[in-house]
Image (cartoon, rainbow, N blue to C red; front, side, top):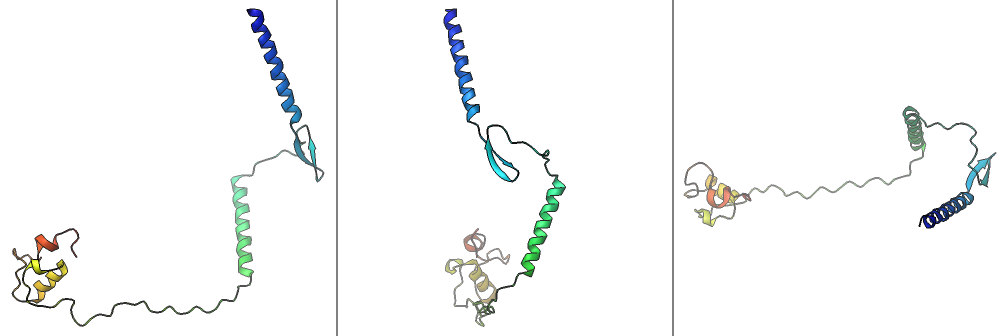
Length: 150
């Protein structure tokens, strides 16, 4: 049994070596040598060691590009634009000389349609019966304390 496992290990190692060699032989590097592009099996030669720019260098380069872009935009001729039309005045309701409500003999909260209507009647109309506790807020149970009161 040990001979079979040794044989398996040898076959496996031969396969791994063959696959590894096949991958290495198929690897191609694209390099630029003396200004021309070349393809080769080995990594490209490095003329000088590469260095990552510092944050200050990157920021200075960015500021320079932004300044150049702003200068180019400022010196570029502006296209002729037609004069803007004045906007028409927005249609606003003109203040009415007549109040929104009028005293018409209604006296009770059940006859009102809103809190603002009940407040108008309480403030302007005689004989209304809408403020039972006389605190100045009419129709507290029907209109004026409701979360959606207007």
